[in-house]
Image 1 (cartoon, rainbow, N blue to C red):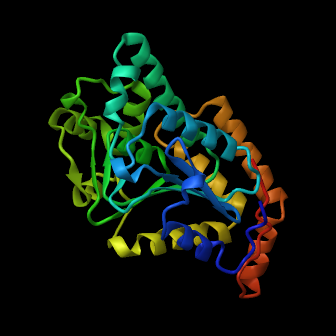
Image 2 (cartoon, rainbow, N blue to C red):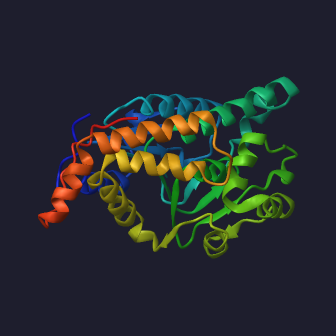
Length: 290
């Protein structure tokens, strides 16, 4: 993957990728991966069923996030839905007789979902969910595993599991509750309601609400800002923010020490200070890793 050293930080290319659906030959198990320089765009692509996720989709996403987590020059990931009507409208219920009709099958299915969410959470770079339309069930959970959610003003979120008789796994519940709290999660589960973007923003689920025709522009602008800044700072910011609200572990302390050495012993801080003093934009290498 080439260095992200263009003036717009990859902004123009990301905008173009988001303005159209991926070609059919790029879609594997209802998921497509496209790239522009140091940015990966992951598209949930089964628009004829509002991007419903099947078991193969969850497994494919898990493998993609595992692979992306190892790419040292990756700067950001965007997760979006194809078709213009949904981020993802939940699980593919038509496959339930084959994938969730027994305790063993349901356990395997739930573990596939949990493994995907853990892999997404473990990606060391910022992950942005660009949510248009419905984000329901697994689609809602997937969006909440991302670092930031930018949503259109017609977006709706919910986890109406009671209508299906299935239960929410611990990893999925934790992913949602750490954002909106246990009480709000209970409301979603008890009511089965799809909340609008106003309530989603008020609960802290959504960080920015935009008109539908501005989603690509606003998402690409944030990606550009990420890519123009220090890679060390962006990765450290994600890790430190994720530590908040819980007791620090030994691994947390080790990570903080590594970032401290990387930041103050590396080139980025010298370039940032020099650029400030010289009144020019900084130009970071962009290849730093944890």
